[in-house]
Amino acid sequence: MLFSTPSPLAGRRHAWRRGTQECVRHFALVLVLCGVAHAHEIGTTRVSAVFQEGRTYDVEIVTDATALAEKLEVSPGSGFDDKFRQRVKVAFDGAEVRPQISYSVEPPIDALSAAAATIHLTGQVPPNAQHFTWTFGWTFATYSLTAGGTTQWLEGGETSAPLALASLAPPPDRISTAWRYLRLGFTHIVPYGLDHMLFVLGIYLLSRRARSVLLQVSAFTVAHSITLGLSMYGLISVPP
Image 1 (cartoon, rainbow, N blue to C red):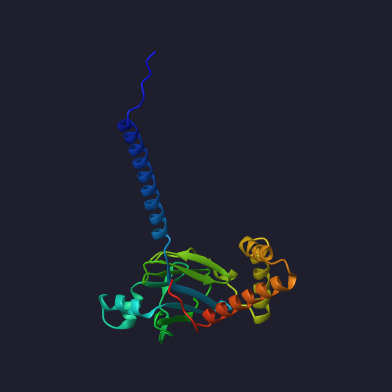
Image 2: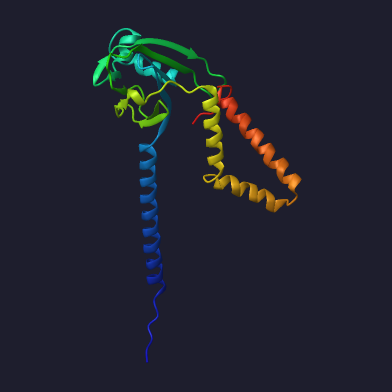
């Protein structure tokens, strides 16, 4: 009986095909992930809207001052206000209003951070208005719009979903804010803090003495709180 053995050339061809198929699959996966990451790119702009008893509004925009200035410079029109209004829309019940605009710019706090522009759009809420909508076209990335405790993630130039003015309460007081963050801190650990629990478990497995574990966890918590506080108050800034 004769047995045929596969030639070395055939084996190399088979291995080459498998290698090529793997490369194609990996390349396709990279393209998909890159597309998803690009579609959900989050920029440095953030917007918040505050309504006082349904009579006045204050929309605050915080964005990169240099990038905004460059975009305004190449836009048609004369005057900063007129150019800025071209891509900003504040509307109540679908009717656009013309807010007052004030600007301030804070210089960068270090060589790695950028100057921040804070823009306030203020005015009177029209009588009997029911809904508020917002459009901001001076960013090309995703940004957040916060109003009355709710947050929408919008693309540059996209109009927000209508927000019912009746549900947009003024900012909470300090006690309410402290209680809210206390609850958020608890749920951040249980049940959503699996990474934190594994971190503590890892420390425990390295040293099972309670004093050592307590000191290390406390040091991490204090350091983490300090960095969050410094970044929240703008004392440090790390590029995205």
